[in-house]
Amino acid sequence: MRRFVRDNGLTLAFLLLFLASLAGQAVAGHVDFDHRQLALGGSEVGLLDYLVSADFLVDVAENWQSEYLQFFLYVAVTVWLVQRGSPESKPAGKVGRESDREQLLGRYARADSPRWARAGGWRAAVFSRSLGLVMGVLFLLSWLAQSVAGLRAYNADQLRTFTDPVSWWEYLGSADFWNRSLQNWQSEFLAIASMAFLSVYFRQRGSPESKPVGAPHGVSDETG
Image (tube, rainbow, N blue to C red; front, side, top):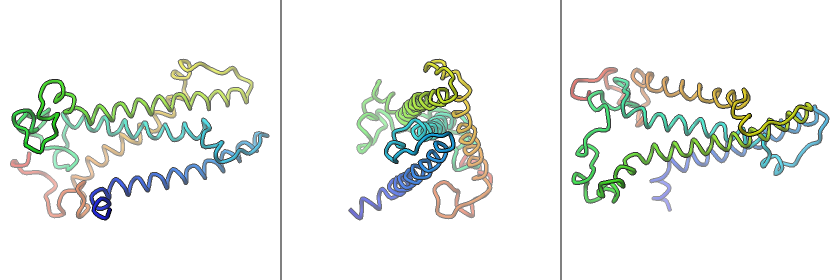
């Protein structure tokens, strides 16, 4: 068990932080929701009722989809785009998908390489894009969940103001849906750009996201 925790410490730590943050969001969101309900002449709801409400679900889903969009695009775009001197980027000389030899594919695979990397054909093609595909699917599923929960929350507000509810397709074209999406997207894109650029000039000792403290800001011809 100790070895398992050590070997998976990064994942476990962030999962615990995720659960703690989600619990905190649930409690704070519940209090805020009840305050708004009372201000509108409604009644308070229980915590469990709030957890299955559209208000809570849409807030969670809209953040999830933006995070998965960030990673999907970062995984895909860094194949072709580089930031010289940044540990977030591969060397400029390796732009593109790289050779089978460099990627340990097919006949260049090692004995301990994943089976689909050794298989060749469509299996190797799928496996070689699997990280981006999974991130893309998770983004689309989270975005779909946001649209469904957002529709419920939006129509609830419509009914409170004696306005006709809208269909799912109408909601997809609404300002509410795109405002929820874009306000998260812009922050994710800014964070990626900041990390790629700032990591050229600043250091975090011992972090794989940082160059060695004494490494030059630029890169030599040998490293790209």
